Image 1 (spheres, rainbow, N blue to C red):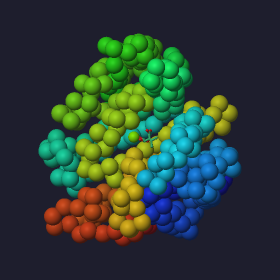
Image 2 (image 1 turned 90 degrees about the vertical axis):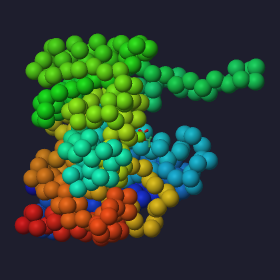
Image 3 (image 1 turned 30 degrees about the vertical axis):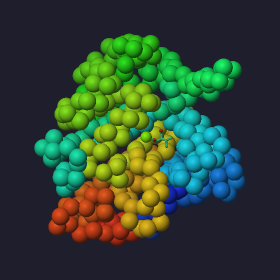
Length: 370
Ligand code: IPM
Ligand code: MG
């Protein structure tokens, strides 16, 4: 079997601790399942800045471009609050997304039955929740030009960001959302602000046209993004797939994450377009949570989002569907058994650290794989 090239970027804060648990799973899969992962590792974010003054080095960028898949931990922390904007930790992640052209960000929000009480909403509102946010990731206001602060010369400055979307960018992200909906409950809700934004008017038109031309079998609904945020906390189970732009997707996916009980539970996949020749798509997998500097290095971080991100990698990059299912099942089983990290701790459960949580999941995964 051909090697499966994984490039690992643990990053800052709790990134390395969470990634260590994924490394154990990779080692097991190579040793016992013959999975053939070949791993290499690099620096990103503040750790890359400390080592070579950049948020990611050219050498590591080249490795990321050459890999079948990138596993990403987290970046940032107060230590780098004052570094120049161009080399701040987040710039490493944004460059990876842009240069690898990872335009489709998949953020599932699944509420494990064992965790419905950990949500800030009533258990009956979130029990069985299974929604997928498809966030556009390489366009919109995060990348649009001009993007600057100019001096107006009268003691005032002006900060400018530009929200911009072209037809093809909306078409391709809508296509991803419709395709994924077909594998789920066949419903897409598109969110924008067409009542105040021209880019929202175009978004709405292009999603509607794409639906009509190619995906009319899928049920499509449009919602203004602010109303969408309200509906997400009012009645989250009404949604199946939500498709939205970079900025709204960033915010709405944090909201959706919290519905599931903890930010520490949510994985994500960022995918490029399939290569015309090989059919392979560039991909990066990362937890939705950040670097959590306040708890970094204490061995108490929840590694589930990182492990679940690796499960998405097995599924989307390597078509290892059974392994991905087993790993996800292993997470659910460990939660059912009442094993919890501090962030999702509940009465009567057993509180464990990062390593013990990772090992409990690995043990379940092993027994499911046997
Ligand atoms: C996310 C994060 C990033 C984003 C930051 C770290 C640049 O919030 O992945 O949601 O804004 O996209
Ligand atoms: Mg975010």
